[in-house]
Length: 444
Image 1 (cartoon, rainbow, N blue to C red):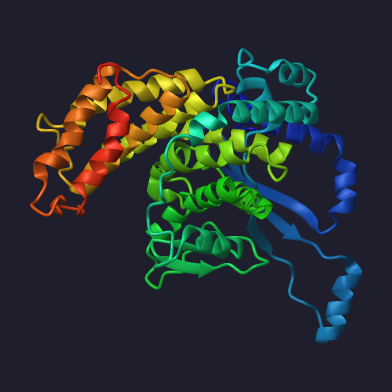
Image 2 (cartoon, rainbow, N blue to C red):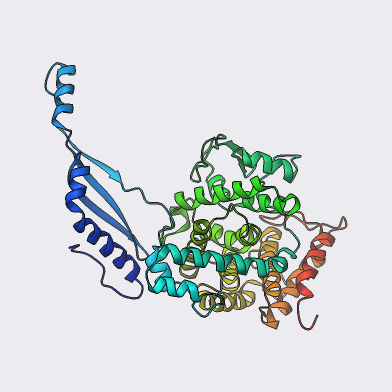
């Protein structure tokens, strides 16, 4: 019995069912557990629930074996202090979505090739379901890979490379677990896992951790693999994903500043910039095993859940909705993909009216975030084009006006002025990139 268990509703059923199954297993195996866990004689717990996801914090009382206590007493020449209550947090790895919920509630059986997955899921044969879904993912990625990778490669943002470093050199560095965020390197050690919540900056600059979790390194590994097909690049990408998804547990609904790995801006960038290129590059490699591919999809589902609920405003909202829309396009095997795409396109259409002034300037009036907004619409437009997904014609009409702003602002040297939290942009170079998006308009 759990006195304050949620009422079972469509929104809470997976967490309720998850814990009911867990407590049922505990009850069925209680005597064996008591024999094996001799040190723990008492438990207390309290819980924290975020957006339907429950986290437990356990209090346990340690009771040493009598012989061990006697040895300690003899060593210390007398009676030891009585045992006290100690507190620990239950270790929990991501993804937190269980197989039962994921295969029971999160998948779209109408998507191509899902019959074997459905049959195994109905039998609750989750190993078979995982294997079948992984094969669907591989087939889907192989079918669509050429179209996605035909989109010109976008060099990573946010100073994830060292000065004068080539991408090839950066990938060799990444394979040694030396990662760079906002220009500051951190050596995690060749044999040690990356700590995705760490912060090596002298002043605790929080952007180091947040921007590390955008995963531009993974995309660089994928790009170099497409150039060289080096097996170790795929292995490194797989290792980094597993390391991240285990550590970076989905927090449910919370503000961005309450989490180190799941700010909504990072969620949008992962889904709308870095992860798609990585998945469609590596899905067919041996390094991306069945378990990795299924956990990838589970994590994508968690991203969709967060982005659809906890979106913000301004340029962040555009990045968030680009990510959500790309989930809707790239992951048709997820049941909510269509609804997420519809939600994202609705927001993105309204935000063009809300955020773009009649003269074409984005309402934050900075030459930096202006291009961030356009770039995220372009990322979506190019992915949509590669996957045969039409975007509203009005998108292109309003974006053309926004793209022309840099021409109107251009200084004699051909760059934009550094306005507000802005930057100097080469207007000719930028406009050549934007033309790729504008030519996708039916009326171009």
